[in-house]
Image 1 (cartoon, rainbow, N blue to C red):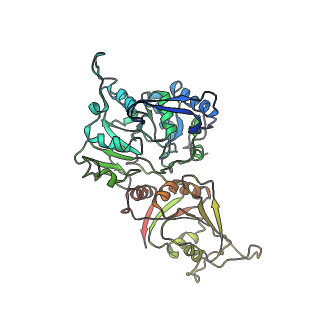
Image 2: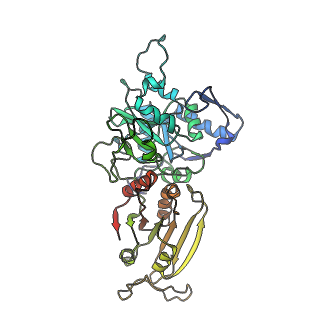
Image 3: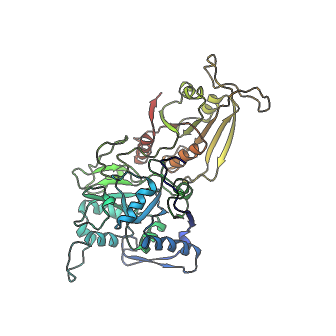
Length: 452
């Protein structure tokens, strides 16, 4: 075990929950949505309900964090008002203490209660609606994008009901309402907003399946709710409407052009950098290196040249390739000049179809006189080959949404293949905000960015 790794304290349990088997969601008039008042009538004898209630009990009593799925990635949630519970999140993830957390709510009523719990209102005071307590700049965003992958920054109430570690000493906090019904049911039943970063070891690729969480946090947390793969695959968009003009602090599931269609957001600006920032982060994911597998990541614009790959093959390095829109399959064959095994990987989560896998095998090493290829394919039984070359490639597809859903999973799979370096094909970030989100994550993961 790496000395820096925390010792195992738990026998981590993975509990499957099918949200369709939990019971019936009941909505109030007139909204008939999660923005209004709602409740859930549980199917008492359903195994899925039993599993969910185990997580609810833990969050309400011991305060130990629970991993659960959202529409974006899996989160690691704990009571946002308890310092000991929030501290357990940082310990499990080994997360830097100045990296703030996003608060997750299940309704506007829950947010209203959080914001007014320390205002000293008299019992006979008229009830405040969210229009009264949430800055007007956010009203159009909430009505259009909540529940969903959008986090807004709000002024921190004074005194604050949130645990100090949630905000990282900032005067604001990020909050969102996830659209995952399982996440909403969990938060609603706990009855308290949950602070929840992604449920991965700090700096590693975000988890889009329960298996990813188990790989990173086994022994560090007690419970993982397995609700299947996440649909979006990258974290929420984070916006700050408290500045003029408003800014995007982190790109994610909501496109900038969609934001600009909302009143007050026509001039929204980009307020993030693709590299790690040095100042105090205003939102999660801004300051530190993120989304990085164990292998070195090289982000490649344009053609993947043999010369670039050969620098590592000559050193006996195992190569991983994540292709997206333009690298053709025959380019991979050309690189290898060898036998390819085309394998579909159905267990890959976060994609609408299996990821295509190509494994190049049985190659000779490169000699200085053979600069035009990676060596000739050799018969497995010939016994003539010397050092083996290893190239494992994953095809993420050409659709940006599919690339976003499969990106973290691909980085994790190539890491599990034992590759030493991963070449990732860049995409045009001007295409849309989903592409900008993908490139933002890749730049934070990459050690090198190159153009050919």
